[in-house]
Length: 307
Image (cartoon, rainbow, N blue to C red; front, side, top):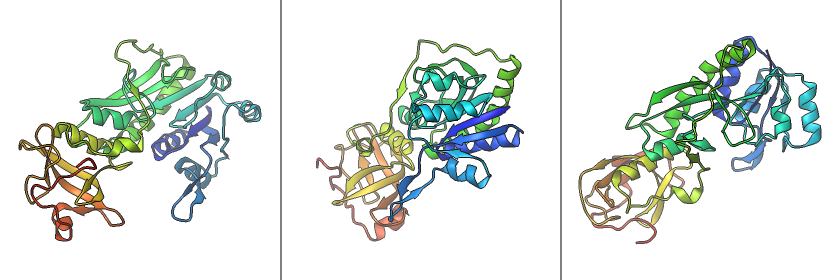
């Protein structure tokens, strides 16, 4: 098939590669415009943009798919289908209707749960026991379209957003060729989403990253795992802001936000949370034993901005 691909982050790259390996003709790749990055704030192309250019594909980076010239360029490609993976723009109906078979989306959740921008983060933070990937026929609503294919996996107690991200990205890649070939052959029936069980995975805001020690330790653990590696959960420890990379809940009790021993065990609203790995500002990530060599967090210390 003649495929227009629309995607931006690392998550989308395996799907683009799978389409190429599957023998489909990628007539163009659309990605978000290069953005300032690094200390020098030089413009850096997105992961999809960089991969596509290296593969010799044509890349377009319009600021908006609502621009008439951009829509005219898409029509001129005469694409059979558009495959959309975390593109980062809401596509207007005109764009959705342009390819012969419309637009299909690879979405990292078990729809209708976690429609929206951050489905992997939200699934981990909510304590979901399973997640997956849906290949969806797109329509104007936010991730409301009927589902062509779905696959699910269990979320392990120690899973992070990073680990799930990589597994789900590969799952989407494994499904995509079967999905679009099934659409072309008329062999796949798109199943409407159930109106029951709809939840929304709103974008992760930086303000959310701060740890609330009044929450149960199990929720603090999910918070840390769900925000790893980005934007990263954090708390004020020993007078400085420290990013918490990993830890685990323990059945100890104490006043929330109080350090209970000399080994970075912090009391929560219910139970306690042992910090196993953390990162001080301007320093490399460190295991707890290494961190404690040059960082004092005595028993009975209060942690968190409100203490």
